Length: 550
Image (cartoon, rainbow, N blue to C red; front, top):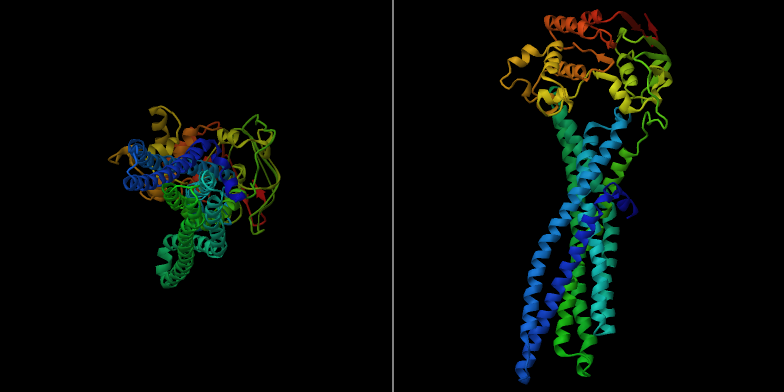
């Protein structure tokens, strides 16, 4: 339970919504119990008045019943509205919190997670936290207040009746749910694990569908998915059986409560300490009190699966940051770059760069070439603070570890080897929220070789690029990313195979335009294409020894 409450900390500023939903829940249950109690008392009192020919003021009772019925209906609507609004606010806060935690991890801190597993944690696991407030915290708190208030209400008429009601409410609302939680712990956690594995398997199967079909392995993948799905169904059936038995136990406790109250209250009626109508009132009140107890078993049963989702999210969010933000940030004095005796390795321990050194003066344009796997792309990732390293990397005289990420983002623009496009228009993918003039955008489109292609599109620069750039080719996606980097107008530009996927004429045009535009810009370009070498004033070769030669 401590972990559940800890997970609500990012959404603690929404406590008014959460408290309001719980308060309305208690008010609705109180109104329903009062409605049942007064209705029973009213009907019994009318019967007694009819037999004894005694006068009876039924206006107050009938008005109270109508008022409580209206209050219950309106309260139920308001309770649903507020609790769901609170749940949506909590989810929104948790998503923002998790996104902020993940930004410093990318990409080195996330490489150990499969794409499907990571997507499952970011979507399904976070979405499952809707249960945290809506189906766990709120029902448990509401049920606790209901037990307390019900006991106090019955205590006004009979201590023994109050003890019987509270005992059976605790049995139905606490002991049975705790037993159900214990029984549901293993299948609940197992179902969460299987659901995550199933999402991973399905996602990876869809992403690699072409390869699976070509290699004839689609049947094997389908069997793996079927096995995971069957296991998940079995665990869910076990949870359903436990929930059904618990609900039966709660219903039995409700019947025992009415019988127990009747047993201890009838002698009080016989001795005149309790009237007949009041006995009927207490019996119907006890039955209505169990309305708040029913959800408790399901709430406690959800805790194991929700705890497993929280564990998976916390494991991701609490991962070690490759390069933590500096406590005392430094500001670079220029756009020079100095790498001195750099050692870098991936998570498997394989060395990528060993004793690597390179100096780039402000405004100098340098190209890095070398065989595949020699660490060319890793250089760019290091300069973007994406990976940990040993040695020293300084920009403008400031150590990279001591430069704040926000400051670095203003200093460096980059075009990675596999640029990401958002499911939006070409314009929005280039601007990313920046405000520039139409002339500046037109210049960026021309210099990245996009002008003629965009002019031929019916929607022009407002053409959607599709999910992950699915509506454009790889070369077009790379040029959009290049235009995005150019409009940033940063003093340092990092390019990783910027003309990959372009035909010879387009590539030469882009290179010529960049040679003019990048005058005075510190440039590091990683490439294996001869045309791109024209951008550089100096060429650095990385060999098999991971060293550099000019």
